[in-house]
Image 1: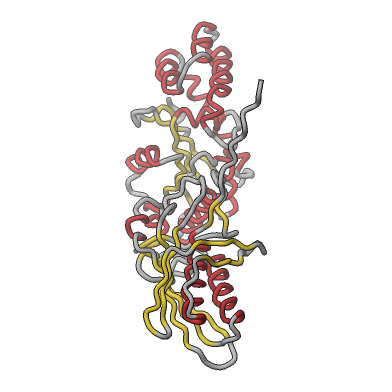
Image 2: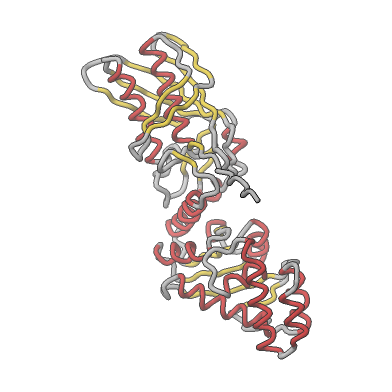
Length: 368
């Protein structure tokens, strides 16, 4: 029997790397008079990456623009395949090389405090700024020339792409963010999502909030917003599967209280101490839940049915009718897990939604 070959997921590069490559291509065109087909971009890690140039155009003696196609590899990134561009102006003078970075059309502007970039500035973070600056200086040094380089990063479809991100929630308006700590996108890694959670919690704290509502996705967030319509939008943060990390970040950011508002399936996993609540753990979580049902109800037939169920929704409907005390058990265990992940520095309220949005448990009222 042969073992199937393992599929290795392909890495990609960040919007910041793409912006640096576009800057490098446009400036190379100005300085050398040649249109590059590929550039080698220095990354913050010390490595470098060859990036294909999609288009490059010289507009006058001192201005050129270039486009790079963002390649996210096998990562499900909304910016995969997007054009990232740079319009570069070179002012040859003196014996020093300086670089000014601006945000053009399709690049968002920061409007709220709490992010790495100050309000009023284009949403281009430190990693990309470093790469863009290095890319420009590399070209000037290679050709033995000096001057001031002004690069305006633009994203032709940036405004449309931003609608599929959480930028508006973070106070970034008018386009996408130009991001990238390492310059590389590692497929299906959790780094970007955790960074978004951290940014959202930072914005909430900067808005003066001491309490946040953590949900696991858009649907549970909609139910939570309907439950607490008086709360500002910054109070609601989607954490996906990153339960443990999110609690730790909330504690580190100085929140005093967290409301966890989640569906029953996620609640079961959280109650069992799972820091990461991916769907692949579903079979194990239902087996554990069956043991709780038996412990509380003494009904072996019900416990067996729960253990063998196909979905958490099927289980919720059954135990809500036949053994609601189990839902309360899950809520209280979930709270203890959350307190531990938050290093016991946070007050925690737990709300468990049924799949129709009706609250099945609220620790504040202690009633199912």
